[in-house]
Amino acid sequence: MPRRALQAVACAALLALAGCASMAPVYERPALPVQPSVGGEVGGGVTNRGAAGGAQAQEQAAALAALQWQQVFTDQRLQQVIDAALANSRDLRVSLLNVEKAQAQYRIQSASLFPSVAASASQTNARSAVVAGGEAQAQTSRSGGLSVGFTSWELDLFGRVRNLKDEALENYLSLAQTGRSTRISLIAQVASNWLNVGAYGQRLELARETLASQRKTLELTQAKHQFGVASAVDVSQVQTSVESARADVASYTTALEQARHALDLAVGSHVADALLPRTTSTGDVALARLPDALSSEVLLQRPDVMAAEHALKAANADIGAARAAFFPKVSLSASAGYGSDTLGNLFDAGTRTWSFVPSISLPIFNAGSLKASLDVAQIQKNIYVAQYEKSIQGAFGEVADALSARRHMAEQLDAQQALVQAAQTNYDLSDARWRNGVNSYLQALDAQRSLYSARQSLISLQLSDLVNRVTLYKVLGAV
Image 1 (tube, one colour):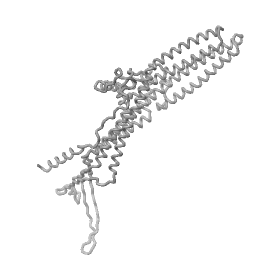
Image 2 (tube, rainbow, N blue to C red; image 1 turned 180 degrees about the vertical axis):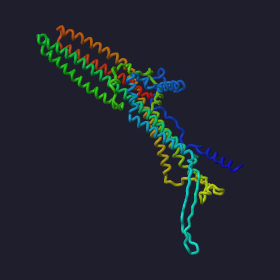
Image 3 (tube, rainbow, N blue to C red; image 1 turned 45 degrees about the vertical axis):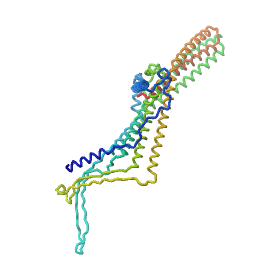
Image 4 (cartoon, rainbow, N blue to C red; image 1 turned 90 degrees about the vertical axis):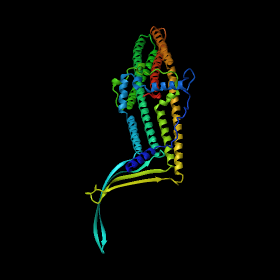
């Protein structure tokens, strides 16, 4: 067989040997440290982890993962505000830049699997003293060289380099999921702040309506007092109600301004008045219908859980690199080129040069540092296992709380709306009886305060309903 063919076969064999083994443990996803279902029992009270149960969980996970934020937040003004936040958020920008940095580090580590080939050229001029016949003479020498080759390329016989590459990949994927989580949190924060502005606007409008009504009542009561129909006590009671309404107007004006400041801060720029909410009706935020119970495996699609699992996989790969350090490390250096004492005949026959320098290094004594490094890697994996399980437990609690609130929210809203209607009827009757001189103003005042409180509570409950929808979007890990 020709020499070139032998060389090609040898190179192919070395490449095949490189990366043919891995010392990393076989990765197994830890069992879910929570109940099989979240929010109730799946499938009539029995959760099957077999084929049927797994298919159901995969369908639920796929449906949630495909949910876009534009499908959740349907109000066009809110969509424009969210778009501005995604473009302006510095936190999101830093998170995405960290992802790009991790991706570049992964490419650097991946390059270690292949030899780095470089070309080098040199020209050496030297003058030295040579003693000949008892006399010193100056002698000038010149040499030139041109070579191409690679230096210290490690043959990855035991998977050390490949495990380091896998670790870098998992770290990159973990940061990518962290960036996704940051994006979801930003969208949810902006939506909540936007809805909060709308709710404070409604509270302020209600307080202003109440103040205007009370001022008219005060004018009427003062007129009655002049004709001796109403007493000074009635005037004083109405005056108290007016001042209380004035205080609420000032308080809600301040709260609305602060809510707008919080929204501007979350968006990263000033939000125009035209993009602010005019109402907090349920049409502003829509969410796909969800069952009362979900398989806990749906939690595995959350970005924080996925980030924790990628970190766990990175620690698993690090164990492989630590184990491979116990075995010999084989490196190759090779070069081929030309060398001559003059540049003019650099490429003449007989000026070709080459070198092939294999080296092997075997750890013999290191005072236990390699064993300690392996222990550190294994302990670090156990830490990431605990953090992964903790992230699932935290996700389980958040989703369970959100689904529980969602389940009872309709009943609360219905009851509160009925309370507002009853309070309105009571106030209308009490006010009519007072105007006709049947009752004192105290009863009408109590009825008015009850109606005002019920309407404020309804606004708060409607806001809670909408914020719960935003929370469901966030805790379910939609994109």
